[in-house]
Length: 478
Image (cartoon, rainbow, N blue to C red; front, side, top):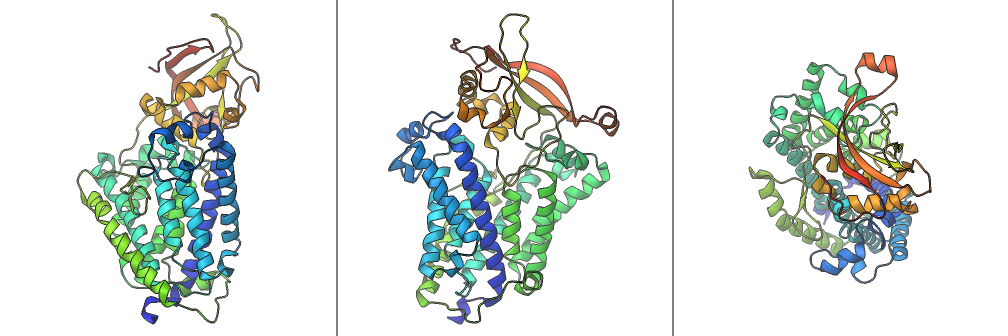
């Protein structure tokens, strides 16, 4: 059975599972803090209403058995406790069966949340976390030799993730082929971070270098992952660098952090051991039954990979698509097209009526609003409402199911909804009316930044939702 064990990957597995545990922890905390307002019984898109029309086969979830806001919170707290235990190393002290049970529960809990999460959980990094989390079940604790097949499945996931992202760009917006997409991307990405203004102000030549480096990594270097060490490790280090660059230039939830952790699992264990003072057990076991489970897993992934690979090679490639309800093997990709103009929704409220009413803005936690507020750092935490507001600015269809209920919650000064925001103009008092305006935003120039201190410049474009009071009915988003 020695052929099925890879002691040299021990450090790679250690880094991956600790990093994965941290991402799980962040994901469950985000679900706990935001879930009641978004998915709760009285949320914007109530999960109980969704469960009435979604079958178990279509959306497998523990919440088919029972739903209550308290039960949802209990699942989140369970996920937080288990991921914290894994992060702290307690999972590595468990017997093999205990390790597998802990990671399987984490996966099942998060799958249950994602499968009732509706539009709020329709992001590629949700499927990435679930796929990586499922593979972690079969990697084994510290005293078990890392399985060769299990570690190769991590490589396969990273390979599909990077190559899929590279191909979608080459097939998508022509600016990727012209090496000009990053002239706009740092400014128009869903949620810029504190350094995005500086990255946007790089010269066009450096933007071309950024884009070219991305293409080389995702379309050329990525094939090095399939080679033996040290070539695979060197290719993985290149991916680590590029993902680190993306981490410091924008807020993309845990997409870049988890990709970086996946890449570290491929780095040569000797290099990791030189950088991390972690002691490996002297004796590593490799139970025969565990080897058999690993072989079965590899066969399952091979079969389920057919559809994602066909999609990846297809001229009509779809981004971030799951082909099975358990999200075991998925297709990935991001930013096949780049927005050239940034539009933001500004939600306002007034406590008066008539033409002399004074309108004041709601402040969101992450998305641009006040032009003098520096874009904040939130990743790897995910602000779901802020992200969806960016999509609604692109097309009102993204808000069809929840935007007007959201405005209704603001009119009611709903405490759970207000906790999603940074501030409300009238605190916990109910406003008389709310409205939604569309502004065009752009980063200030260096001169404007020096003269005004503002990070953004904005111009009013139109009204998306006319003033709405609690008594209004039949309001439509235009």
